[in-house]
Image (cartoon, rainbow, N blue to C red; front, top):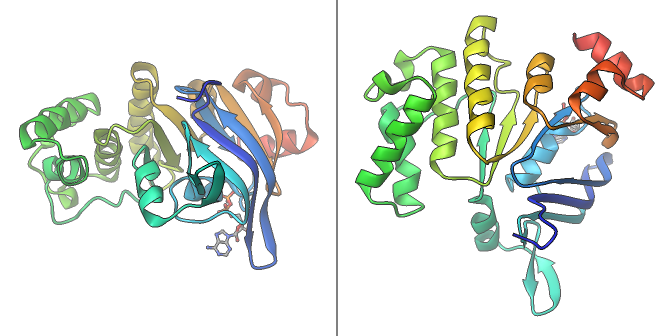
Length: 257
Ligand code: ADP
């Protein structure tokens, strides 16, 4: 852990797609165990932040740190040079991500979905990986679905398996990208309940992009309001939702609630 106890640090991050400048010298930090939610209009750059953290996109300027390591760069002597694939993989291992579409391995049962990467990537013994997988499935309320195939589960159940699978890799940071937007409201509610439990009972750092404002209010320590690739408001949820400072935050909240 770095001396100043920061889990995620964006420092003047610039991201462009062609002429489209999506992030403009973005700075923000999250402390270990903090629950941070990103809100804002579509196209404001929220998903790009998660994709940068996953190493699915590269920055055009600035740096990203995860714990005490740079994601975009690596140290060579006292210089910073662009990260190579091996370095990226190492840092990325500290980060789990759950997507809108659950992306389970369709040809593996639930247990194997959870044990595959811990065994092959982390080198865990099978018994240890299976014991942990069972604990996690219990935590997401799916202990009885161990041998089911993904296709036999509802969307909400698949998403809960996806959350358990991400946690099986023991990430320091869990990224949640609109994890309920592909689900009917009652299935979404079950997924949000599971995430509330996880937020309460683990020390994982959470970075969520969501349009579920009640969930954002419940789960977050901080809410960042994005507009045009910049953070225009950064405050505890009660302040953002009950007395936003910025007119653009008020307008946005009116449009989604
Ligand atoms: P949000 O998550 O806030 O809706 P995104 O991060 O998905 O916003 O997108 C921000 C901007 O970046 C949008 O203008 C989008 O069109 C653009 N963008 C995102 N990904 C790509 C890509 N792979 N290629 C080109 N443009 C992209």
